[in-house]
Image (cartoon, rainbow, N blue to C red; front, side, top):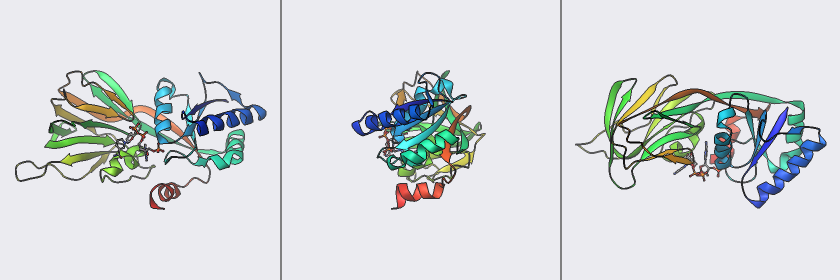
Length: 256
Ligand code: NAP
């Protein structure tokens, strides 16, 4: 099995990378940054997003595992102090595996993929668009923007907007509003909408001055009048320790 290490660019994570490299070599585990089977991500969730986008074209062959070096680290089960346990798990291949569909977004034929969410935001003017669920019109939305996330992204921006936290073993899509205008002229659903994973969401409007954000990235609207978001066939494989607990991760990250 070949390993790659993808780390946050700070001193702590660089040091940890060197330590892990040394331990992998001592354990006769191969390092191959170009064609890994497993990518070890060192940092926080921001680094995890970058790692997944870095290996986007190899997701069918690559699995990801996180070693947290500070930050929130929702995608991480191991922390810096667990290096021995971490290396042992790698040596013994002692993991549970979970697969998750990425989000796919079609912007005038430009296809982008996201791990956390896709969002449309207009920081200058009121953002307006019609929202369709599987071609059926839901509403005419007016406000600052809209976000679509999957189960993995539910704890990121979606959570800050009051969207529901979704257990990571429930594959689904969630549509969440950003600072919606609600009055007796404009009204939309006004709450997050959780939908099955095979739903296609379409947004029709003028996206010219809209920021289209996906994970840590942005893309031009390419004069699109309709943007579609749906669960991709592309999946990501996450490796977790055998005793991994979603509830513990929630508590560690948000409760205490
Ligand atoms: P970033 O600094 O990389 O991330 C912003 C914060 O979101 C960090 O604290 C990060 O945790 C956390 N985070 C990312 N993915 C998460 C997940 N799945 N569950 C829980 N927390 C998560 O910022 P960025 O490069 O601009 O954008 C990356 C992500 O930031 C986006 O995908 C979006 O979800 C999030 N974001 C959040 C807000 C908000 O909450 N108001 C606004 C914009 C963007 P770490 O500290 O571990 O890196």
